[in-house]
Each structure stands twice: as structure tokens, then as C-alpha cells.
Length: 259
Length: 315
Picture 1 (spheres, rainbow over the protein chains, first blue to last red):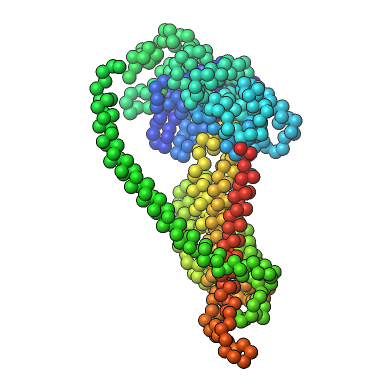
Picture 2: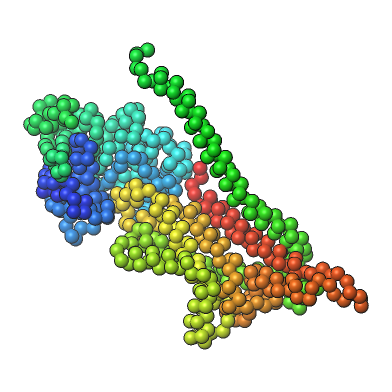
């Protein structure tokens, strides 16, 4: 199921503006990789290139390759819709579909992508996804109520359930806990630990403790300088990054001496 | 307490500064309420006039079942069935044509449009917004009657109304689609849902209430139009349910026709050989038709809101 992700010489643009340059990394299957770094350094931008969400923004473009098990997802013959079906994404702010019930939110990806599905199949998917997202017990009696009526933490778990309902190979999380309180954050972090058994997970976070808690590998991004594009400073085992990083800039950032 | 000097002195000063702020706040509030009242006066006045003068005509027996065939302003009775039928038919045909076009144009402009084609489309919609109804009517007349040799008929009115309805619906739908947060589109794309399905199943349903309001606004805009009726279909006091042949009545043209009777012949007439004051029944019919028109538009509004409510997930 889970797949290996490789980035080769990624240059990411917004129009003519080079936002991130020269990114290379490899992400092993069934692992959690955290992207850390100061605001505006391009962590989220890099994350969005992994499932071709970057190009949704008008004028945005990408140079270089992203390989999923050796297959370049930026090949001209590849349909971005298929890429996104394989690589799911959870966003910073919980964004359940406001017109849909909890049930419909979970099966949105399944129902909307192609034809009719059997009710029993959908029911199973809903229960399995909500259980995986640790939300089943809380909502099983009100699946027909709107998803927007849940609390923020529940909404975010609903979004995770929605993302894993389509059975992706990789799950990208863009600061999934930044809008949540510590208890909901803990619930999501526990969930990440469970999900990595099945999925390759990449998580962007501003919270370094969170990166240390949940990830095996950590990538540190930084701006190459004022007015210069962002870059990947280093990627290494989380333990090494937080105890003995190779690069001086990483150490400055981790220890809080930065900026 | 720690000695943080600005806080206490700030709060003391704040009391005085607050005085002038409160005054400003009060002034603004009074002005807002006053404006609200001023805006409400004509609305209530209008509703009251139409209700008080039209209600007895509308509630009289036969108003919704009879036409004005063979009735003059001196004859009581008759109804507005012919006009209601014509209005509903013409507006329905217009809506059926205009709504799909408008929705597609709005979706194109918000979700796909960029470059010169989108700019041109926006410009054209702007121009349509400014077209007086009589110009739209004359355009249809020139194309279909002068050039193609058609006869005056109800469906030509519908076509003229389409030109007036499209910009209203396009504008409101555009605004409503723009209000749908981009996060929802991205959430949908990230699930591997193609763009067209995202628009159909996520964006449009989210904006549905607003879109329905836009459609109702469009209907309200055209239901009261008079110029296209006078030019393209005329008026017939009898019932004609055929959109594609013959003169056809509608509520605005009925109001217009009856208004012409208000002063023709005066309100005195010969009754049993003596000159006596007689009631001018045209007056009742004018107000009755006006009230009926308002009620139809309001009923549509209500229906649209109910649809919007029931199409949502139960809160």
C-alpha cells in the first residue's frame, strides 16, 4: 500500500517568483516525516507539490520530478486527479463540506469520483474510516447530522476520515493541529501513530515538540536569505535533527537562537 | 500588582475618551435606524395601498377563475385568470431558458474564466444589465417579426425577458460562487475529485441558497416588465393559453389596459335614464392585478427559500 516518495531538483514557482529551489529528499514508506522551519520558507508549498495541489493556484508551476515508487507524478501523461486519489491531504483548518452530513463527508471522495456504490460498501467504509480516525464512537448516532456541527477537533478528525476513506497510499498533513486545542492535538497525534502502520505520512508543523513526538524523519526548511527562495537545509532522523544536527542553521532554529 | 504604569492611567483616560466614542456610536446607531425607517416607509406605504385597494377585488368570487372577456369598466365581475395564466407561462418559459444559460455563464466566469474571453463575457453581461426593457423588446421584434416574419406571440416576450433576466442571475450567482471558500474546492481536489464534479457537488450546493435568491430576483425583475408585452404580444381580455399564437394577457399588460379605462368615459353614466355616479370597476382591477403580481413574486420567493431549506442537511 504505502509508497516511497522521492523529490528530485524541485523548483517551485508562483508565477515568475521562485518560492522554493533545489529540493531533494526521499521519504520511506510507512514512516512519518515532519517538515519544520520558519513561516514563509516553503514547507507547505513543498508539501502541496507532492500531490500536485500546488498547481491549483493560478500561475503556480513546478520544475523537477516527484517520484512515487519510481514513477514521476509530473509526467505529462499523468492525470493530477489520479495523483490526488493516491496521495491524500489534510489541511490546516478543518474543512468539512458544509452542505453534507457526517456520513456524506466521509464518502464524498468515493461517491464523487465515480458511479454508484452499494450502500453496504459505503456503510462499511464510513465505519472503518471513522474508526481509523478515532471518531466513530463520538458520531455513530448522528451520522446524518451536518459535519460542520462538530467541534474543531472532531471536524479535523472527520477530514482525516474523509481523506483515508479513499484509501490513499500517502497522507499529507498541512499543520493539521494548528487550529486545535492540546487535547484534540493529542488525539490527532495518537491517530498519526496508528495511521503510519498503513500509510506514508508527511506532516508540516510549526510545533517542534510535535515534530519530535510524531516523526521518525525531520526535514528542516529555511529561506536561503532575505528575498531569496526557500530551500531544504537538511533531512535526517528526527532524533539526530533534534540532538545533533549536521547544519548550524538547523541547530540555531531548534535551539531557538534563530531570528 | 506589578507596576505597569500605562494600564491604570489608560483606563482613567479611557473613561473620557469613551464618552465621545459613545456619542459617535449613538449618532451612528440613530442614523442607521433612521435610514432603515426611511427605506421602510415607501415599502410599507406601497404594500398598504395595494393591499387596501386590491384585496377586495382579489378576494371576490371568480378573480382566479374568470377573465375580462366582454366586460367593460362599468361591468362588475370577471377576474384575472387570463392575465395570471399569461404571466406564469411567459415567465416560466423565460426562466427555463435563462436559468441554465446564466448559471453556466456564472460558473464559467468564476471557476474557469481567465483572459480575454472572460473579460469580454463580463463586459457583455454589464452591457446587458444596462439594456432598457423596451430596447430588448425592439431587438426581438426586429429579429423575429421584421426579419424572420413571425407573428406577435407570448414566446417572443419570453425571449425579450431572457435578455433582462440573464444579467441579474449571472451577477448574483457569480457573487455567491465567489463566496464559497477556496478551502472547500481544495479539500475536494485533494480527494481526487475532478474539477467539474467539485463544482457540481461541492461548490454549487454550498452556494445554492444564494443562487436561488438570484433566480427569484431575476423572476421578480422580469415579471413586472411591461414594454416587451406591449410591443411583442399586446393584450387580450380573454383567455389564451397558447404561448405561440395570438394576443395574450399578462398581469402588467392587464394593469396597463385597465388604467386606460380609468378616465375614459368618467365615473358618471346613464343608469335607468338618469345621470348617476357609477363605480369604475377598472380601478379595482388595476389594484387587484397589482396585488396578484406582488403575491406571485412573494410566493415564488417563499417556495425558493423552502426548497433551499429542505435541500440542506438537517441542522
